[in-house]
Image (cartoon, rainbow, N blue to C red; front, side):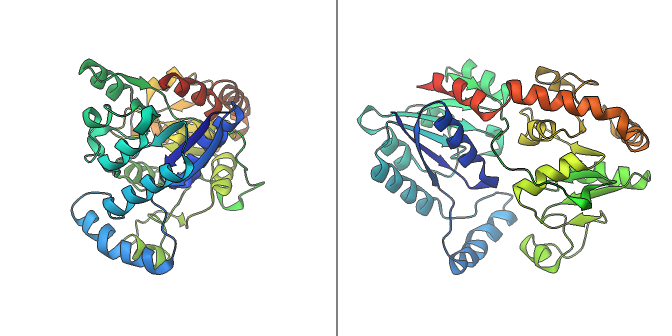
Length: 336
């Protein structure tokens, strides 16, 4: 059996989902969370030593790159895998990539953000050690045009991940779960101002004093909100609300939410007509062209929620048939 080491951030457990998908196609997998912090004292130190200066500089560093790299190198030496799959990996130094590829070991990196937003990741340098994949079709083409072969592999859904039986706070609203990026804030404010009931989940929205302190905010956003919830509850939020919002802004890759909300039978309001690559607009998802169109669609769903039951079922069926992490694992295997 091929030993696979998945080197990944902890981000919502997606690295673990990817590892489980490879187990299902026949690999022996081990996961190393390269951004893991093992004590409250270290978390507090990292927040003030790395995260605060990083935010002031417009960056997203939360730990020392040297510490992260050393931990990942140690994991490779401990596990001695046949294949190393790195998820994102933009804070890992070149010492890691060299160690990962030592003795002819096969290495791959799967990026779920655009290269322009990961300034520490040098595709040309990393490609000397690892085959590359990205969720961004634009990056896949741009890098390949530069002679860096890059496979386009979109994100997906973990069909073994648990989903909470219900979320009462999601009933009767248009929901959003995730970070408060500007386009998302604007969309929810527009819906709220138009009289559409909305609610957002996550520490970046939450008015709880602890969450405001953790996200360096002095004031609220004026959107009805809830604190962070576990992944199983987040899935229930998307399923149990009238509809759930998916705003990408300047991303050209599709978020995990694109597949998750459909998988659990949510009514997805999405800002990307090119979602037709995965789902049929109007039949499996609802695509809005601008905020006025968003309000129109949201009002329709709120007024006649039962009319979208078939859309919910079609979206879930399509996801399980075509867009799970097992499907993605079989594509990623091409890298080695």
